[in-house]
Length: 74
Image (cartoon, rainbow, N blue to C red; front, side, top):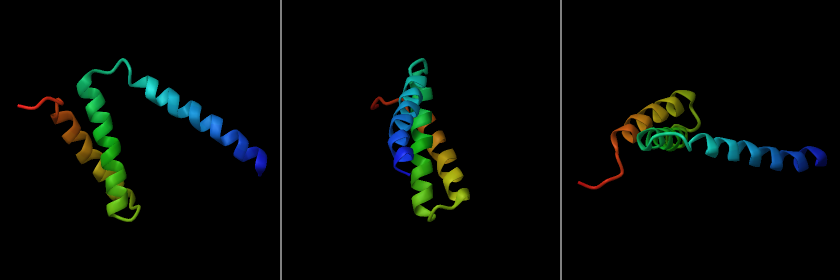
């Protein structure tokens, strides 16, 4: 069990790093959409107690909101 825990942290770090690097060639709008979907999925999961439907719904709504924002104030 100790060997698995020692191996899990570096593997998780490499996966996180590769996920972050995948966002580099994205446009600003695509990055906003991805962030909105991620935040929406977490919020939907929390608000519905881990429901799959709530997580997917939150991701969809968050992605739409993220896509609609451009990061500039009007």
